[in-house]
Image 1: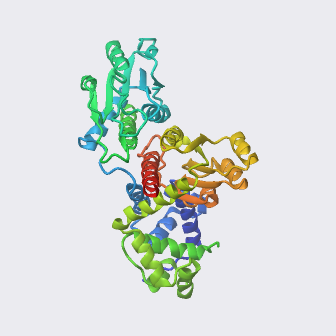
Image 2: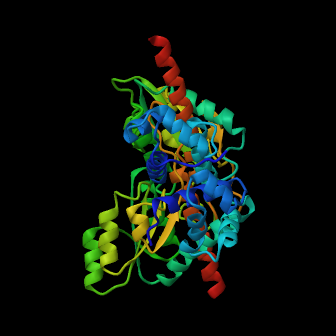
Image 3: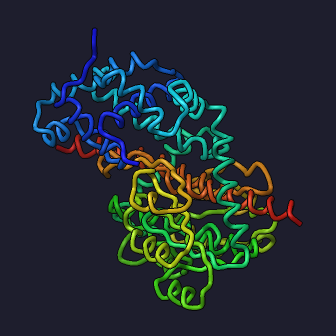
Length: 241
Length: 220
């Protein structure tokens, strides 16, 4: 069967391509409204391109985007199965709302970067967890103690913090535990204190001396956990209605 | 060179097939896209390929999984080469959004490697330009839009621009001398999906730094 696109279908396709090229998510309804056509016209055009339907097309676009990034990203994120680690971190995020939380940001190399990233993203989910190395955060205030996140990283040779990490973050970690915080350690190091964390998530070690993917791995795990947390929260919201 | 809508349509179809490891024929593309056979055939040359075979073969090869590591290595080596050229000149850094954490990362990492990294600011760029100093601007901006003023300002003063964005098709990536694309995954909070743009940028930059260190070692 000839799969010719009509001028109208080409116009739909052009709008779709414009969204895809800008990395914008577009729904079937939005695209139909934008092109002033019915949803079935959009689906018909998408099927002519060889997809089963609109969902099939968006899935493929998303999948291709992820595989492209996959060339760069570390293949192994955690030392333990990553799904289990992401579920555990998502469960910790569920403990955060309505509590005083913080993300330890003691060093400029990794802790401060990751803490800044996590704090910014969590705020989008109405979770407030400032990056901090200030002991004042561990003093109970008007909000009950929530979750305290710590990054423990083993520096590679030639990096600024190499050889300066003994005892790093331990004081704040102990203070948080004593104050009643639920402590989470994201670690590729082998320090003693992390074993006392309520949740220890072991990040996969670096494979060589030249490329440090610790921060990338922690951020990937955090992103996976955020998605799980959002799903869980969406489910909770639905059950309350 | 701008492509017509039909040409874009042909390119999109061939690209989608190449991603699936297929090399479509001219007849197949004409049927699927509704573009006349003669116009389909012309697209390959319009895009700078030798012919249809070259066009489909190169795209299909590009998307082969085993070619990806090479493609990443080519890209990181290219950026590392720019850093080698600017070894004694200022490297300005600017980033916005989730990926802005890369500014602090780069200040430290480039400094460790003996490079003159500094945060971009209009005043900084003006000061460098007034002293006729060459500089390169490294921009990280997922949308490829928000840092357009910095990009323009630097380009107008003759600075080289390396852009890391989430699409080839953004104002910044079109203007940059070296354009690196790291795919993102935007979603809303209610139906959040993991976005690995920043993780990808950090991984990419680590590889660039390793390539730079390697290039410097080889030269010495």
